Image 1 (cartoon, helix red, strand yellow):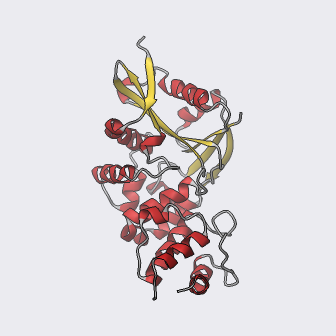
Image 2 (cartoon, chains in turn red, orange; image 1 turned 60 degrees about the vertical axis):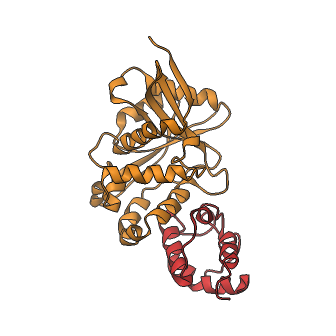
Image 3 (cartoon, rainbow over the protein chains, first blue to last red; image 1 turned 135 degrees about the vertical axis):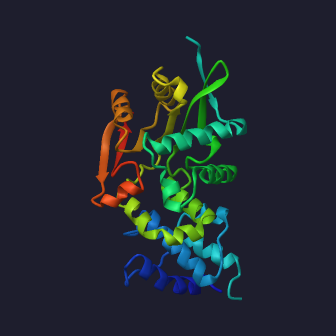
Length: 82
Length: 212
């Protein structure tokens, strides 16, 4: 599973969670620069990502995610879809 | 009068810190928001706090590292918490959400509508400011100026940083005290949804800021 393929996976999830069909996933995206990204939409997004990949993030992973790039890296490190 | 001594909290203070969090969360009301929101009782909330505190996650208030305790004659009488907001790049409210998502995922899934209600009056915190939270005095030691002493303690400990307090709007007495000590109202948010009062002690949140 490549970082780019994870980005593609996340695209529709983010479009739905943040109610923005035109949203484009970038590594530096976070609550500071994405409209409607608050603690509630963040929770929804995490739950949707966990559901999509059938994973549960570890607490240390969750509390170290500073942006989407960190999340993509964590998913990749889990070696999912191999 | 006996001398009030402040020290950083240790694991020996865990029970008192949890008392402070629970007492401050009530904010003079009968509502403990986390219990209402997640359908847990106060004891379960206390156990949850102990589990979370044990994880030692920095940058949010459920971490002993960020707590200080005031003692009179070696008796814990007051306590409070402060941290530098978003020092590691993640805001404290986001961290708390992630922590709750980890510990209570199934309950969170069922409570998204209620969380949205609360989110509407959430006031974003200012990165790099000192966030002050959960100032609490043991009921037997109230009206002795201990909260004022804690305010001075924070000012002396962090003389070169702005300080911010985000609180529910019903605690007018505490708000007036903070204003007398240099805090100004930075932002206020009030919910238009009446059922917010089933979740929070007030329909309003207030951000107070003390600039250096």
